Amino acid sequence: MIDETRPHELYNLAAMSFVPASWDQPMLTGEFNSQGVTRALEAVRHVDPAIRFYQASSSEMFGKVREVPQTEQTPFYPRSPYGVSKVFAHYITVNYRESYNLFAVSGILFNHESPRRGLEFVTRKVTDGAARIKLGLADSLSLGNLDAHRDWGFAGDYVRAMWLMLQQDQAEDFVIATGESRSVRELVEVAFHHAGLDWRKHVRTDPKLLRPAEVDHLIGDASRARRVLGWQPTITFDGLVEMMVKEDLRRLQAAPAPIRG
Image 1 (cartoon, rainbow, N blue to C red):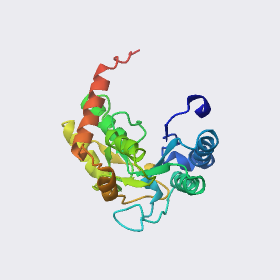
Image 2 (cartoon, rainbow, N blue to C red):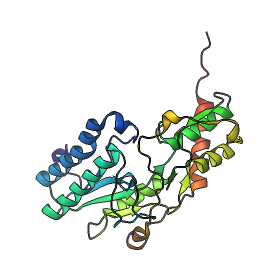
Image 3 (cartoon, helix red, strand yellow):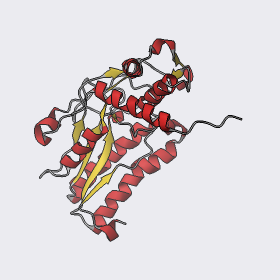
Image 4 (cartoon, one colour):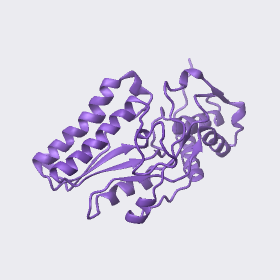
């Protein structure tokens, strides 16, 4: 495919990206997330080394964090098969850049969300759940660890950062993040507020939804991206959650009514 299309830029966003599922399918996760990247880099090397290559790295590589906030120099300590596979992908990209002089970069992106996020991810699970409860389609929402913290930003802002990385004169890796850490509890509070609901009346915690090894506190320092790329986020956390709740309400209201037997 690369030989036929000869792209100027290649953005490798493909992955088995749902972290909890990586414990259920660790071998498949490694095949997609690690060897898939190697195959893409090999294709670029053989077809046209001038192709600029972007690899989607992840804040989950930091895992059991060595420092707060996390920068491009923070050591990795992944806490899931997903995180481990992404560390391999990150370093194989560095290796091809240094070994074959490819313009290959990795964006270490912290959680980036939008109304298009899959329903299995906690942000959409929360905004969809709040919308369903608001519309009388459900009466409760079950979640795992409400005290886990993440650095959540808008996916549209982060895609702009990906593009900026491939427009530079020098291939470098960057942390992309908002620099603000929020708990799952805060996410729930804001989402239910925008739905006009009291979350305490509807949200339940379920121990079965806890990870085998939790990543507690991720927050990124994107100061290099701000300085070198001229990048900064444009959507606030509150604005992001409001956008997602409104879209879930619109989607559910527009859906055909279920047929009752």
